[in-house]
Image 1 (cartoon, rainbow, N blue to C red):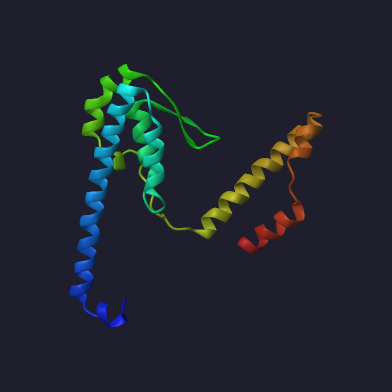
Image 2: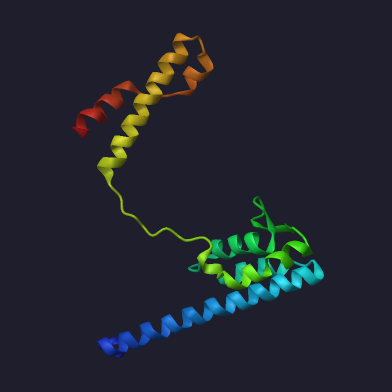
Amino acid sequence: MKTNEMNSAAQIDSRIHAISTTTSTLRDKVQECAILIAIHTANHGDYSKANKLVDALGDGVNGAALVDWFVKYVGLTIDTKKKCFAGWSGKEFIKTNLAKAKENKWYTCKKVNPFAGYDFDKALASLLKQADTMAKAKAKAATEGDDAKASAIVINIDTLRQVRALSK
């Protein structure tokens, strides 16, 4: 793309519209394919196509929503170690939920939270509060003779004092 090709607001708006249309079409195609996979799974017990569809979405698409949709409406189970579908809840589960699967779009299942910002002062206050709680738990464990618990809580009191002094 040449730089001068993108020099007008109208050209940018045209591309944004094209992207928007492509996104809607992609969502619809994924929904249709997911429904076909649900029917195929019910008929043949083969849910491997669900893994292929999730993998095909790639980066930038909320694949977690599609995974959640397959779990809710198709009854697929997940192997968390292999990060793939590893079983299904049977033909009757799919028959019972197929109408709901058609009504509920995959991309609405698991929303990706937008970046909510970051507040350093708030995070530091929370960390200091947590350190105070852990310091009390360490002291209590030591008093009660629970050396294992007391030694598992590591807090450098000097560092904590320095951070607290800087945060004021």
